[in-house]
Length: 191
Image (cartoon, rainbow, N blue to C red; front, side, top):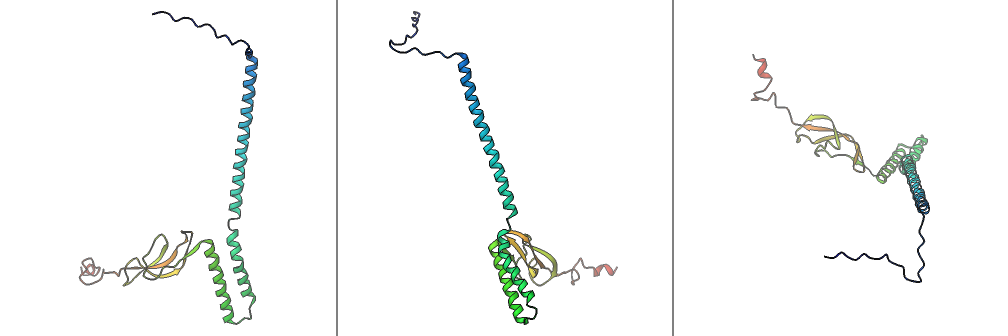
């Protein structure tokens, strides 16, 4: 094995200009300039992000503040109609009833546009604890845990219960004092 021949330093071709060497001070100054540029760009990006965050918070605050604006616009005719009914003191009962029915239709229309729906279970419908609130349990011939009567309608807003329907619910008739019941209270009195 022979040692490889040492390579002579490359010599630039004749006629080519020699490359000027940069001093360390120049290289340091260039690096510092690039660093300053990057820092300024970073600070601008940080300021832009902070401004965007502040704008988003302001938009959220505005949205919360004026969220009910649409429903208020829909309810203003209802208010006007109620005020007109109160102003018509000498009107015939039939005219007042017609005005109140119109007001109720306006209210229901406003609710519908806002995504509000009634929860009004029919008698015999299965009790749903997510949408109904049992106010009483009444012994009945109907199947237990079914709605007997609606005491007050409930409402949902886009499938979220705002107020559950207040209902009375059927329960099975008591069989405690029935003849042949081994747990009857009547057996306790005979001793």
